[in-house]
Image (tube, rainbow, N blue to C red; front, side, top):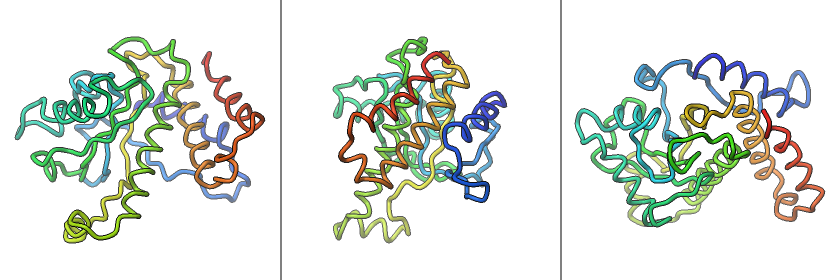
Length: 242
């Protein structure tokens, strides 16, 4: 990502997710890549790439275009991944995925194993219905990141709980338990969406912080009081006008 987003993220992390002490380990295992997708070295491995897509799953503009070019061409048709995505979106949402949601879509068979990064999934996280400003949608970055984390964590829990069956045997033969362990994500809604680097970074960090807290403290998050709720929402509300 560009330097302005790196700066915004580096400023947001200690502000919205402060460490308990100066010797505490960083809360995230996050590696920043200041490069384009096509220039990303093959030594950088990730299981899933996030599309800050439109609600209809068309992967043919801005970063979505880069996804189609890098994962479909030259061996397959440019729309191969788009068609796979739209089939899943039709099954789940009848073709329209509301902004703020996340849908995990496995690569079709003809695309698997064809990229050096080891990517096998695309996450469709619409930040807008169609390409347009997303500044009116005050929490869309937070909502997309939260939905992404829920989808990935839910999938991984399902993998961990799977016992027996043909799919498990096939995965073991491949030396792969099916879990999604690494994700490539760009600053969401900051292109034609017009969200500022500061707002993106703040909501990105807050969503991750709240999600980690939810996983680590089920006793709180499974029985939220209004006081708990407003403690979290007040922090998000302060990002609206950034």
